[in-house]
Structures are given as structure tokens and as C-alpha cells.
Image 1: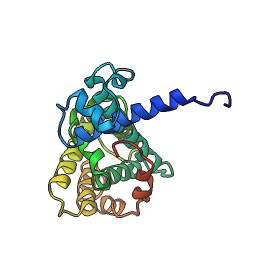
Image 2 (image 1 turned 90 degrees about the vertical axis):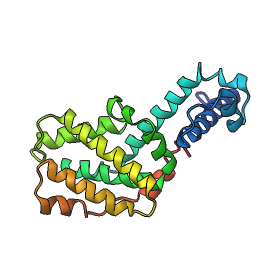
Image 3 (image 1 turned 135 degrees about the vertical axis):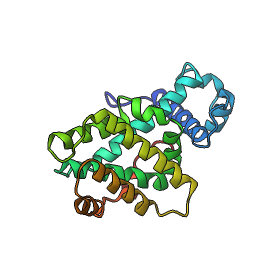
Image 4 (image 1 turned 60 degrees about the vertical axis):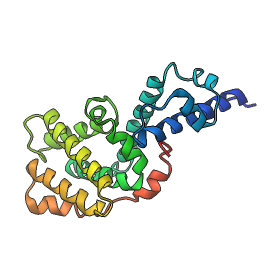
Length: 218
């Protein structure tokens, strides 16, 4: 075995941990946050004893699921905006993709919606990145905001409500609905109506291909 290559026990342990995270994520996505450890381990097809090799409690497991989802979600959006120079475009593209992700990966969207307060208060995930983008656009003179953190509250509320409505109304066009909300946010941040409209009509990267490698909440 090459130096630095994980051995069989380590690989088996990683698979068990991943199975527990997936199983817990599925329960959270379904709205069942009261599933027992026994139910989670059965869904993961692992023994109860194996659970405690990785997590001290069900609450710690659920927190790990949420943190992983937030980080993966944010990293995905970051990766799809790295080639943009205009911070207003960066913010807009991130929001437009976030809205579409609720349909592209509904299970992940439900995990995020079920923990909405974590979106605003977390140091990582999409809230941290959205605040960063708002501040960058404000420094560049693209946005006019009095308090970036309060602006984040508005953006997070819009994103959470948008996601909830997209899940509750599958007949709605997710792209058109998301872009309308994004356009309204840009106008609120001081962009002229015609420019806000144009930015929200720009082509987006292939979200489906990016999500295929996300690997969180399958």
C-alpha cells in the first residue's frame, strides 16, 4: 500500500460515515427530524454500534448534514462564478443558480429550507458568500446599501421564501420566477431597471453538470 493511501478499515469507516450522513439527510429532507438512531442506522444499512464510532449523538449527525450541505452548496455556487469580473453579476448569478438548485436538487433544497436560520447565522455556506458578494458590489460602487448585513437578511428571506414556493408550486417555472426575484433585488440595491433586467437574462453555466459532482444529500 502506497504511503498516505488510506487502508481498508479507514475506507470502510469513511463509507459508513457517508452512509449515515446520506440517511440522515434523507430524513431531514422529508421533514422527519425525529427519526431515531436505530431508524437512521437501518436506512444507512449499518449497525447501531457503528454510529457511535462516528457521531456522539443524533444532534451532532444532523448538524454535520446541515454544515456539509451549506458548505457544498456555497462551494458549488462559488465555482460557477469564478470567471466573472463584475461583483453585481457575481451576486446575481449566485442567486439565480441558488433558485434553480431547488428544482435541480430538491432534497438538498429541503434540507436548507428546514434550517433557514442557519443560512443567515452560519460562518460558511451561502450566507457568508452572499454577504461577501454584497460587500464587494458595494465597494465597487455597483450596489447602494446602507448596511450589508441587513441587506443579507433581505436576500436570505427572499431566497428562503422563493425556495419554499418553488417546492410548494411545482407548476411554477423556476427559472423565470427566480430571475424576477433577482431582478427586484438588483433594483432594490440601486441598479437601473434596464440593467437589472439585462443581467438577469445573461446565460448561466450548466448547473446540472455541476450538481452531479456535489455529492451531498443524494
